[in-house]
Image (tube, rainbow, N blue to C red; front, side):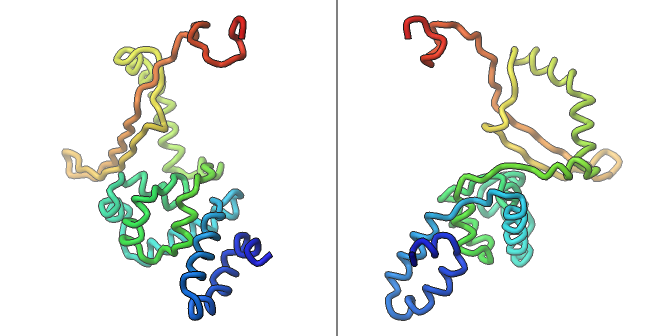
Amino acid sequence: MMMQSLRCHPAILRHSTLKLQQRCPRRAGAIRASAHDQLLAPRTRDAKVAFVDQLLAAKAASGKTFDEIAVDIGCTNAYTAQLFFNQAQLKPDTAAKLKAAVPQISEEALAVMQKAPMRSFDPAILEEPLIYRMIEAINHYGEALKCLVNEQFGDGIMSAIDFYVTVDRITGKQGEARVAITLNGKFLPHVEQRAEDNTAATGQKGA
């Protein structure tokens, strides 16, 4: 019962291991590690917002920008921001770098960040002018972009999984600040669904 309670309530974990640390540091560490293994990424919108707020508070306390943290951990600035919005999984090798870059992030939060996140977005973000103007730009250029991709690559799509995004501030010819957003995705061709290549049992003759 004690172990089950610790798994479900990380706050109890901190309280319960305080005395254990004094009496038996190894046992306390084992309990923390076991409880961390049971943590899941936030699954509801409210839980995710609360967790993101915690991560952003740690970032604010560090005094660093996303660009600065990105340099520290060796990721793109957009991917780094995604980590803080729990939209990407923190890899173990990067976790130590992130802890060094933003020491205010708790070990518990780092453990949660390394779980597969529940990727989602708040529909209200579509009302944010910056977002809907970018969507409008994609919609407006959409057919032309599709034709260009088809001409250069063939029939297919740009992956959003094998995908890199960067946001840069550049200066125009008149000295004005300009936003440069680069989407770099692997090309995925549509395949011809030949029966002999279908390895799934369903749809195969004689399967």
